[in-house]
Image 1 (cartoon, rainbow, N blue to C red):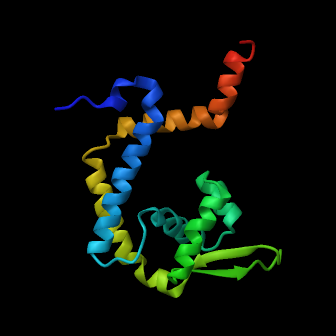
Image 2 (image 1 turned 30 degrees about the vertical axis):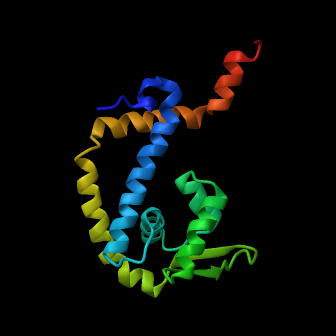
Image 3 (image 1 turned 90 degrees about the horizontal axis):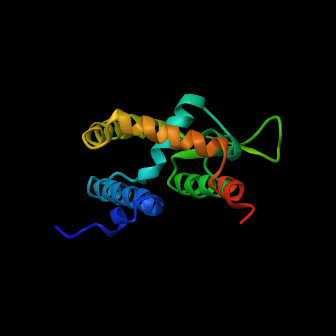
Length: 159
């Protein structure tokens, strides 16, 4: 077997390896959804599940809850709205904002999608153990406490 170049890079290859894992899982899921005639994208499940739990949230609230960028949430929710899975309603307390909620179509299809997501979870458990998830949470928390760029500046500010 050919040596994996990214693995040979050690820590400097970390972000590329995370991206490669994401791409592999994302596009495999996308192919499955397409072959099963499921009209969704692999990254939509987090929005569906958050809106199921919270009923309705603004884009800003969704971004904050998921710790994603505002533009990333707008991109995903725009596609979901185009496909009819979410509705956007004016916020009764602030007419500059909209509240996003699952549409009737989204609510109708949610049980079908949840069945598939639960199956994906079971398959992911075959390759990702709890220890890895705990370590990932530790990394995320360290970076939430102090970003990589701030760590770099602090460490090398005098050089």
